[in-house]
Length: 119
Image (tube, rainbow, N blue to C red; front, side, top):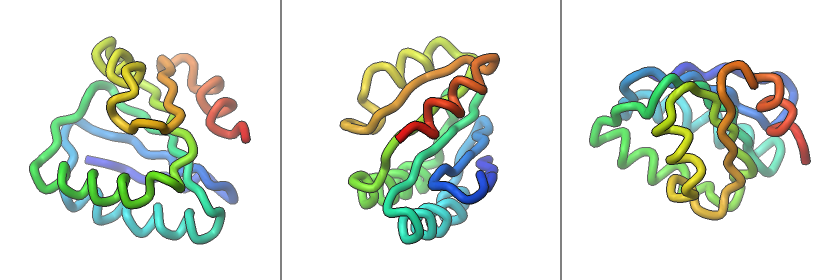
């Protein structure tokens, strides 16, 4: 499950990620990414998740297609969670190489917003 929340008049997409992500979730996300890039020339994410989600095979394929197609327009990703494995994964720079990513605990949500809004 992925819930997309509009963040107003800025290039930030806020998403809440559940335990499992499907291809259909990415099909909903794709037009939001494209619209944001068209309007701002870039996209930033604030991703809220409890743990590393389980991805269906279709979701993995869509993830690669969407994010690597738009990698040059992906500016920042703030991951807000409460899972040590997720924190370590974000810090490895493996998920999205050459993209500025930071991990924040849930109680640091204000800091995550401030960081992702920085130019």
